[in-house]
Length: 456
Image (tube, rainbow, N blue to C red; front, side):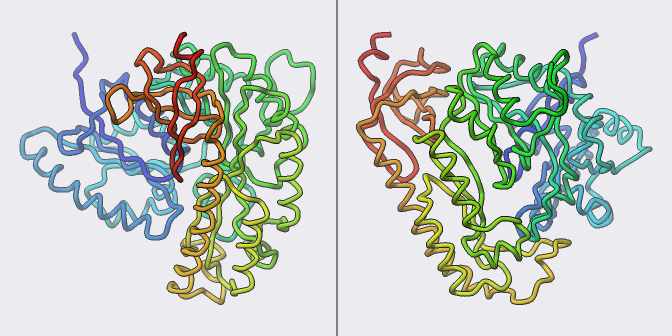
């Protein structure tokens, strides 16, 4: 008898880790007959995969649940029940409150336990058993995710590390994702080979602190002790078909010499590094519990650039952290000028419930933080546009991923993660071709196929 087909809608909030988690949720639910849908109203199962990083994250979830309730009631009236699950970091942090406040929710699943979704859904359908599962079990989770991955396209995320032991005072990750934990090398290599066999040309290794990776070495390895990220990268570089490797997000304190050397030695390791600093003020960095000074950060960048002179540096910044003065903010602006970023993400500080920062004195007025953010973003945008403009006249290898907006146009990514638009035949989708850059904006590059690529 053919298996009944059901529709699955997943709404993903926040970070790249959540994108990876949503992909794996689809994988574990596929054997139950669930097929992806792009509409929540006719779905049999709706999952909100939440992120707790931004302020009012939980309120956004409740608003979405309010919009889903009429769809659920309508389906129930036709005898076709809709199951609603809340997953991710908001589920981990506020699971009991969600169950109390939102009866429309059938189950709550933390980020370390979504491999239990088939079991939990079955229990829910039987109207008994657990409705909430938020215990940290990273080993059990990844052991349960050994099946085939469903992938679309030629780039894919691959989680290698989860959790955080840094306890920055603004961050909820240690409380929602747990302590740092690294997957074994063999498990990662197996998944990477699966991706390559499915045509993936580029992988991005993910972790809350990905460069804190310390995983169990592969079977038969001569060296004792855990492998660091540099060793893992060298191992993955041997996999045929994987032409590009990236990793994100890193902490300056875990940027060791072996990892920096990998940037000089591995052609497949892309010359792009996202290394957040958050502030240019040592006083604010201390209040954030970052455990490094800005000078420490600048020395690390100098070592990285010495190893890979063409590397592009990306960063994160928070303005308006409690106690931030005009002088502290000016130190951040000066730090940005010193490093000269190719791209960056910047935000106003938002109070995250349960974090030490939320209780700190000297909360900065919103209008002050907003004005500072505008000034910082103007500087960062200028640097990003200057970096992109500097690519004009260069020939860059571009991985073409899909058709562009205009007829005959393809969309791809440069080694520096820039979007590149170029007139090219559709047969180049999924391939890397050399492109001469002829134009640039702050957000993308325009190119022309080189004569060699066009001939090929």
